[in-house]
Image 1 (cartoon, rainbow, N blue to C red):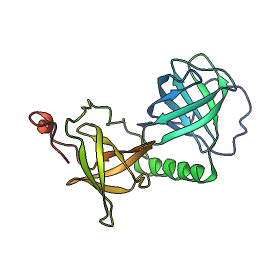
Image 2 (image 1 turned 90 degrees about the vertical axis):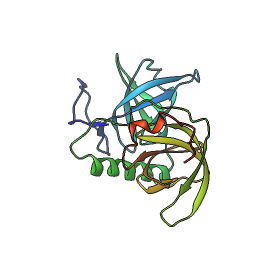
Image 3 (image 1 turned 60 degrees about the vertical axis):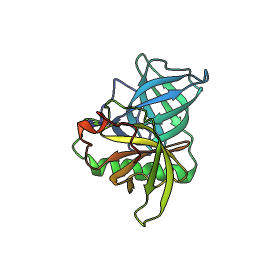
Image 4 (image 1 turned 45 degrees about the vertical axis):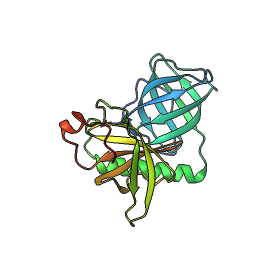
Length: 205
């Protein structure tokens, strides 16, 4: 992830937003009316809007659904479209908007100077997918690993701990960084040894 200084990106219209947009470069994907997913990188995000670079910009007024690393699912309507990027007005329930505000505040607190996204590492699909997610209060939930890397994992699980909360997957301490439809993505507190996957990548967590 990279935090960068506020920029105009050549726009000449008057700024009328009521929410400061946080300049974030986060990987993700988005889906337009064609129901096909396209990769993207965010340019900025606020509780009411998002700007992103993507290979297909869509049409003004078109519905778009984003799945952004460390943020999760966002839905909106395309409001502006330019050569290399587009912007959407988010359509979020009040509770989801407050959750997004908290997530953005957490991202700022965690990376005040801006750091590269370290989670972009090779991921594998474990043969044995069973795992146990443990909450801070000791409650445990069965989970299934979707994919795994030395930096983190995605897992299907029936609970959605708040983004930024500490959890344990097996014996490994981690932090929740994203929600998706069927589970969560986590980032390990300490990177796994490189030889973790050398012999038994199917080991249960």
